[in-house]
Length: 628
Image 1: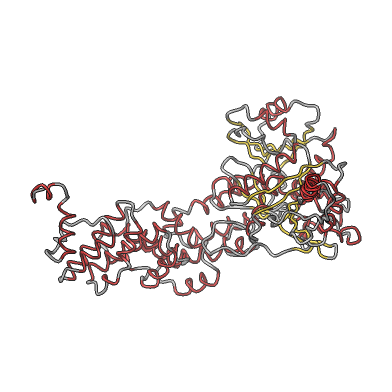
Image 2: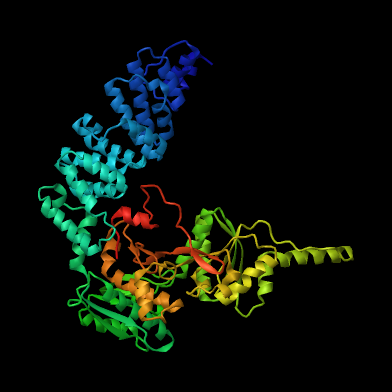
């Protein structure tokens, strides 16, 4: 093969690199594009002009980012070859480093970059790069868990860039101020320089009072606007705060409660109604002279007809129905002229029309929380006992779906009727039956009796036991009898009757279960007041009463949950959040039976400062979005 033919078969850049490695020639860095970071570093290492080498490496890092190769960009940008950069190259290196760290979600690198960059650093860039530099800098601070620095950066950007989208910028400033811990916020408030920064930090500070109701927060926002009339945020409030400030004016004043007050659901309907009115009278922000509530009995009435009748009477909101079948009739409508807060959930696969919200004591929510808790405890291979029936079907599906999402697995699920032989069900669950059958098969094969001691399956990490108290008190000792007493047991609220009963519940010792704050929060003043006046409100009736109380709160906070990211309600049935389809989901408390008495457990370990998960009282206080 001739030399000319050889040259024609390879790209010039590759040949240049080969010659470089062989020492026969140097690479023209102006035209050489390296396919990998290591080749770029080798090429730059041969260049005696370090400024030229630095510029080349930065250009290569930028190209790697453009080609979706951020790992190669990181290798270059963290290289020791990029030491002694001149001012121009240093600015380029920091900009590229911030973009790469954010792209890779490299929080450790982001913390290193953040420690070297002050909030006003982005002002060193040309006007064409100002917005990009500021936003990357804010992103880096957020990734480094320094939201106050991100907020200051964006405040300075708002002052410097008159062409910026003020609404989007103010939304982002507020999001970072919300995520700033109280101690940091107090420190930054004291050190804030400039009219705009001082105004922002004061706004964040006044909304940190955890005792403020949503109406009081609205009044506080309006007072702040009066005190800071020239502040940009006074004219363009963050969307969250604008919504809070307007909530008092948007509360429904004419409400219809559509509940079954006859038939098999009569007691449930009455409990929800009583809880709703108890919260109505307890709500300090409720102007009872303006708000009217009418209760309508849905028993033996087609709900579709009832809904059309209520629409003609100009109601602002309909709370109900409780019956799933009645709720399903609304799904046939594309949009609802009067919003509905349904007290149940649509069947799987049916899409909710616009204006329909769904809230209830969902078994699926509890199943998902059990799976989450067990996975966090590294209990990834589980056994489960679930009652037969449609309710159990839904719970099983939710449990399996969440386990699958979290890389857990259900090794065995036993469905049972309460009349079943629970010994046999437990033996099947723990693999004892299989062990016995294996021994019998061996005896038949060899034609003689063998000494046999049954063994439970050894691959299980824990047990999910969904059972009412009378059944659970039988299952739990059977776990020990069949060699599974060492396995941790988790259950739903179904296991607790609502009143401590040590003499009967000692068999449930060490069972961990989830339940509503109404049942488990012993310092709950609303519950104490209610039970002093209505001692019969206990057990499942108590949970339904709490659901009714939360229905009143939700009736007044639906716009907040619908349109405000990360908004939630600290309710009697749990921490309430809204999914995009308008369904309300609950995060309950956890307890464990000790000496036959439920003992409230601490919540999950607190998440990082920038987490969006509303799972603890601390996160409620930090966010300033406490809803009563």
